[in-house]
Image 1: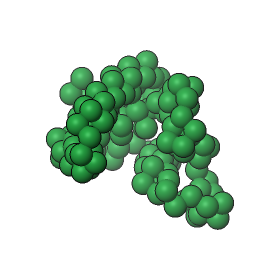
Image 2: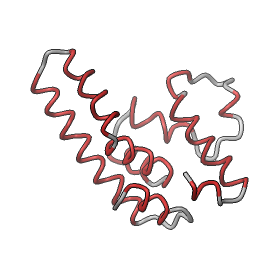
Image 3: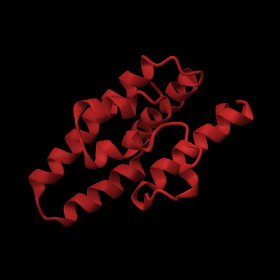
Image 4: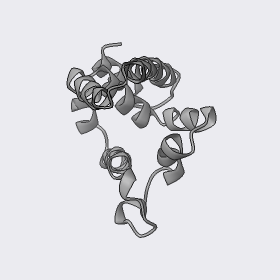
Length: 131
C-alpha cells in the first residue's frame, strides 16, 4: 500500500506488527517473539475469536489497522470465495448463509469504526477500500 510506504518507519513497523498478530494468532504462546513489543494487547486480537462479546468486537475494530484488514478481507473476491468454499464443505446451507450475512454485517461495522477513527491513515484506508 503506497500510503504505508509514505509513513514513518515506526508507523510501518507498528502496522506490520499488528498484521503479524493477526496472521499468527493461532500460534500464541507467551514466548512468541512477535508479541514482545506488540502495539496492542494480544487479547484484542484473540478475544473476538475465542471469548466473543460485543465489547471484544468493538475493541478489535477500534484499532484502525484491524478494521481496515477485516473490511479488506470481507470485500476481497478471492477471500470471499475461499470462505464460501470452506463454509460449503460442511454441507449446511443455512450455516453458509448465516456466515456470509455475518461477514457482510461485520464489514459494515469495521468500515463504520474506521470512518470514526482518528488514525493518521484513515483516509488512505478508506480510499483503498473504495468507500
